[in-house]
Image (cartoon, rainbow, N blue to C red; front, side):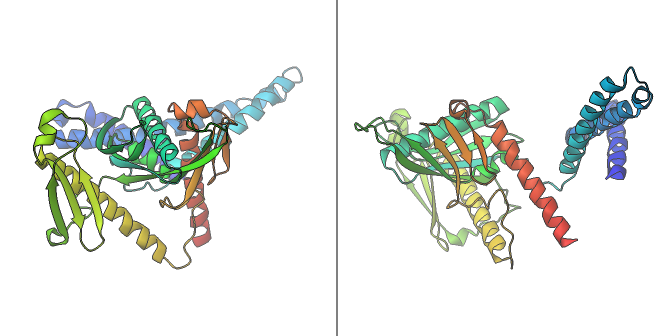
Length: 355
């Protein structure tokens, strides 16, 4: 590990030297590639430098530990530094783990109301608001692709494109069944109801990643419904694409242009079929190990939002937070980072088993 870290530091120095030279920018592709590599290396190198400083500080305590007057204070500092070194070493091991090839991709976020009727639809709207607020904090951009609303402001189903360099890496563990326990506004008896929504997070894949056969597709046009003024309702700008071999159907009507709706619908279809193929490959692996953070499949219950107790529980990692309001207002970092950490630990455990 330490040799890898030394190599990473040297490589970062080389990149910084290249980026300081004006001629580098004569080749825009080279400059962009170097900037991306620099951005990827910085967290690793910075953590390594922090580790080196903590180790140097610890080594510097040797004389103080031998001094009777300073020994007690030095012992306390030694304990803190050793804990910091352990934390940084764990962080470095995680940063050196192979990255998901889909990290860095934009994602399609799909939310569907499940069990619970109108209450499930209202919860689906709450989840979209939660992810929208989280995305805003992350600097992402959300573009609605399709939405089917209810009269009371709920959402039967919704899909949107989330654009951001870290979108897939931080949202990929949100796939699954989200359960809410609360007293619905329409409940006169004060009884707590349990409703569910399904969330799917699909990386936006290119044609290079997954190719669609035009012969497998049926494309229909229809008049869009909902907001958009007279134009959106008078022209058949909405698109429905059906993948005949699997029966997968995608609709897109958020754009005024039929061409743009078709392009977006094909992109969503490609993402769904890629995810389906990925899940089938994983299921086919003999003796497949179930990850601690789950399979990410849509039928897997992953999280409960309990309003009477003000808590959120992620069932995959056993994490319970008593700050429901904050979570629903987009404070997801503690959940997201806990899931990322669990994924890395599972990868490490699997590697040790295979060794």
